[in-house]
Image (cartoon, rainbow, N blue to C red; front, side, top):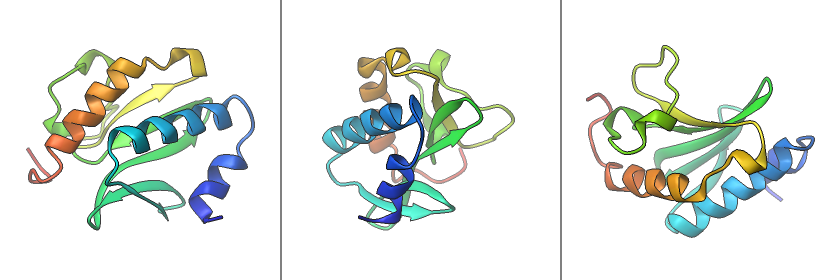
Length: 119
């Protein structure tokens, strides 16, 4: 098992279930992703370029997007909190995950994956 998978499986509930669900949706939606362990968190890459990451922080899970500044869909669900470029979806329970919103955002993230880092 790789360190990214260990990170996910070592988390207490409900974080483990949230992370496993997000991992499943990300990998089914964007099949080109490669899961690595970078910056001490699970990080998805496409062709060597950062795509998104999973992070448990405090009492929530962040699904952060490297090129979030380029997103236009579902802005009401995105968290930026002082970050200029990276935006994230934040989840506190498995039930709080709206798969259709998540999939829309993953598809947009894939569509803008080659955009310049700064908008």
